[in-house]
Length: 232
Image: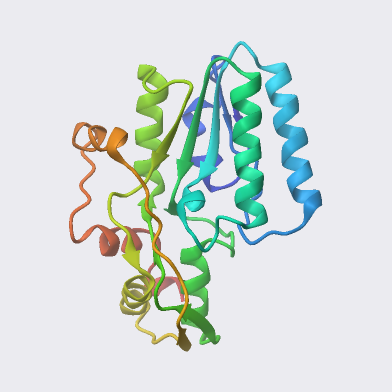
């Protein structure tokens, strides 16, 4: 069973008819959100799902933003931590996956990659935090790692980080998107930003098993998979 309709929910579609697993991917999709009503909506949906599906393996998609000093005090991160705590207290068979920035086909304008790409191709001005880096992982790879742990019952009742072992400077991400689009971004660097420290020790053993190679070309290869000059 899959609760949700966005990028993450679509990635886990193989569980749609699985009566033993519930993928809860129906959360707030904008990490910059400050609308309390949106957070309350997710909380209510999550509480109902926990009450109704105690017999299922409960899978919650959280965020690696908890490790980013510039985001740790945001309403979004505080909310996600509260939802994690609710699951730990009320369910006996769960996976909490903290996922980094996903690359995938989505119309959500609030993802980091979509924000950068749309501003670049449209020529819209934006600010770039020159000290910031972001952790990018292909949605297919994130789902493959999560699915393996769900199916093989690995790291149950734990919080597991699903992320690339490497962070990329925001400037490098923008440069890669500029090369793909053939356009130069209209931006200004500002002296802000931080580098999230994400521990991927537990999942690194799974990458070779699942044929996931985070080599030097990973960022460019992944961005080309989902972004193209043909999109212009």
